[in-house]
Amino acid sequence: MSVINRKSLLVLLFILASWITFTVVQNSAKLWTALKLPISLHHWNYFTNSLCPDALLNPVVSRAETELRIKKIMEELDQLVPPRPFTHVNTTTSAAHSRATLLNPQDTYCKGDQLDILLQVRDHLGRRKEYGGDFLRARMSSPALQAGASGKVTDFNNGTYLVSFTLFWEGQVSLSLLLIHPSEGVSALWRARNQGYDKVIFTGQFASGTSHVNTDCALLLNSSAELCQYLDAQDQEAFYCVKPPQAPCAALTHMYSKNKEVSYLSEQERSLFERSNVGVEIMENFDAISVSQCNKKRVPTKKKCKFGMTSTIPSGHVWKDTWNPVSCSLAPIKMKECLRGKFIHLMGDSTIRQWMEYFKSSINTLKSVDLHELGKFQNLLAVDLDKNINIKWQKHGYPLIGSLIYSVKDIEYLARVIDRTGGEKNTIIVISLGQHFRPFPIDVFIRRALSVHKAVQRLLLRSPDTMVIIKAENIRDMDADMERFSDFHGYIQYLVIKDIFQDLNVGIIDAWDMTIAYGTNNVHPPQSVVRNQINILLNYIC
Image 1 (tube, helix red, strand yellow):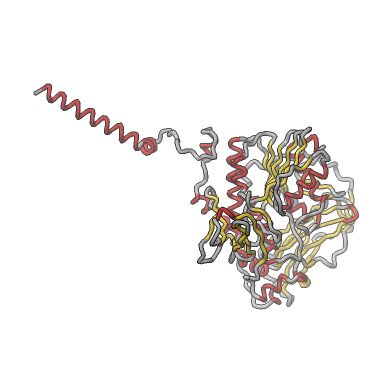
Image 2 (image 1 turned 45 degrees about the vertical axis):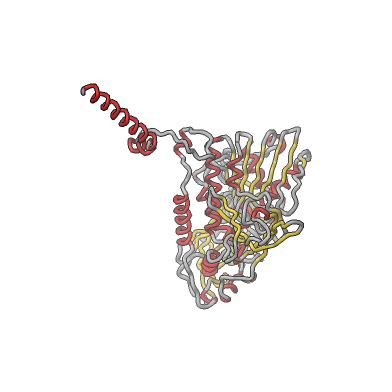
């Protein structure tokens, strides 16, 4: 009996051991987590190339975290732009009735001084306003010297503003303060922007045998018809088209867009955006001021511009058609030698495509490569085989606004392009986003900026030597459709980009401040502006 009992006990122990082993294997992740011990991650995110400590400290941001970040940014922006309903245009801010007063006026000012102006805004009936929020643009200039700079506007939120100019150069200087939009108009634009996705409508072209079929497309489609969803599963960004009856969703080949005859502004609100009411001069009667050297001490030599330097307002000034940053110095760089052995990825809209055209016109050995694409937004590649220079421009993903038809066969979101980029010290990525997002609710732009931010973060983890530069938006013309393309929308996006990317080691080219200083008012500024933007890039990388 003792032998039988011993065998039975051994069998029971074997079964118990097997069961324990099976349980541990099946629940190992839970067990190690409970014990707070290191765990081997078998299902690692496929964008991460290694299990380095830095990568573990920067896990992929969850969808829930992304949604919370978007919500938080939007709440902050809502506080920045409170509702300002009005019953009559006469109660809105008037440039003609507002009063600008020069503080501590002098016959002659000294180079380097700060000049301050106190602005008290009034409505069209001459009554002082008790709240702020007006969209103002301050600029100083000396056309004869090809000089200009933006001014800093401080809003005290009580109808009073302090406008400050740094007197960067000697000579006769003209001062300007434009009322781009009254606070009531700003509030109306903000509400209208976030109300609808249909201010621009897209038409998708599908291949169907030897013919083509056109259907409606959009970021959001209110349709009972069957839809094609073009989804980026990683970042949950989507674009939709009505599915043609005789063609699969994969047959989408081309796209074009046009403004839809819809407005989320009242008739009274729309009157604020007539051209005569946009960008009205407040300081029309101000005379030019005289600035002298005043024998002041020599200004200390500034360090060469590099990543991570303090951002200032204004960020610099133009003098003799050359950009001079406040916090650092730009050296003259020989472009061809600087770009030797470099691969420059230009990603985004047509304002960064201008860079490609400038590179090609400035380096005569840079030759275009035929990528066998057609249309307005075709990808561009130029190479110099002798110097081993490669420069590529690639459009960003939806939305892309264009009245001329363009191919979408190769369209993709920039985050995926960045994820495919190996990166190293000779790889430079320049990103420009904004102009095509202005007509759509701000959450679309925030989500895209966060997606690109996460992709850049992953890139810098695996290849920290890669250089990434963010080019801010340019200001644009004032006779554009304000509900869709106002610079107010661009300014909000400018703030969003600076906020989102402030934690990464990337370079910022403040095209917003630069184009104000130049006074271009053109979405595609002249070559001199592009040249100075590119000179900042060259100083960053060489």
